[in-house]
Image 1: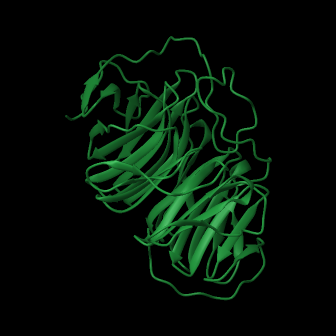
Image 2 (image 1 turned 135 degrees about the vertical axis):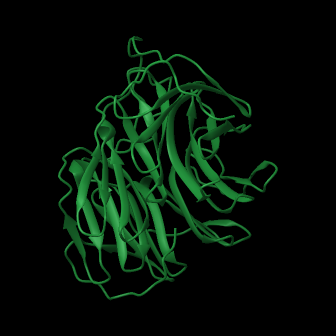
Length: 355
């Protein structure tokens, strides 16, 4: 079912829906704008404990200086963002800082190419790189955006939550404004992955502290049946080969008909994932934990650091990046992880564009 417009708009610049999602169906409801705040779910890079930690699990308390996310369009075009509005860019030779125009924490980055890169974060901050400059798109102080995905300049998704309402938010950009969908059963929406406009996956946490999986096609969104703990990451090869990353339980896999538990064994909470193919998938988490899937089993990979790793992305099987706390940037070149520094020239690398 498609979302229908609510009676009033929460924000004047966007069409807004307030929705309750039930198994494989959607029903419009009124938005509880006047509710008193009950808790603030923890977000990427958050320092403060939630008012009621029993509502949403506390994933991590990283240091002030941290990268929250990393993504690139190729081996010579890699972006990372994080605390204090920091944006770093790798051009194939060195990593340089780019002026973002904001001091708020940026929590996610994604794009469809070198001239279409989106950054989102606290206070509903949305920034866009068009190949020449970074410009602000929107600022909505009462929301926090945790994830973003671009299938193209006129097909962009952003997700997060309203801290005061304790409700997940799902946004869709079609070129002129954000359509905003309030997902009532969600305490927070954490990560997003898409194989195309008709196959968009969103994961997070529901109000019962369980994992939540949404599947979207255009403005049609459904809640999938999922039995598991809160989810922090999602990545797939195609609609019938998708991995879900719980915060503190074994990784799960979707084969087109059902979810199954993997053999991934880590006592450390996990936070992000990416893959180069069906037999080459990476997951990262607290205290420098990195797991790798080779098509048969998940095995640990020595990162050489103990910093929290929030995000992982790669241009190829032998060119993978990880980003995290203390300004940590790591790079895998096929045999080991190397810690990188901003401003230091690196060996040049060529690579094909990848999501």
